[in-house]
Image 1 (spheres, rainbow, N blue to C red):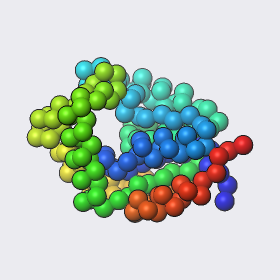
Image 2 (image 1 turned 120 degrees about the vertical axis):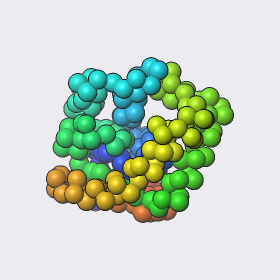
Image 3 (image 1 turned 90 degrees about the vertical axis):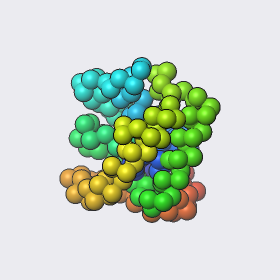
Length: 178
């Protein structure tokens, strides 16, 4: 099995995309980028489409990289250049509890996310625009849509992990690039 050199890590919010992508990048010794950091400007303003796409384009033009995110607005760039896509397709209860724990931790510690932004617990937990509502709006839809999206990129080596233990086994066998 060849060592991947351009990876996309995808999965619903709270599945562990960023954590896993960072670990892969560190293991392989290659750059990592989180699409959320390009999308969420200060004060939670959404980046203009051209700016976001330019960031994905510039990053994915490198010879090696790991990028995480679900943004369809630049999927045609990143997915076309990737050689491997990792889909963290974990169960809804697992992802829900991970997301809730993460949201509580971020809200209580006032952890800075991207560009000075911090999650507000009332907003994140109870607002229609909050991350918990986002989970319920997107989890099942993304699961349904993913096979059709993947069919548009037949060059991708797809690794679909349904349990964290599967991802951990794959990661344990991943060797650093020379």
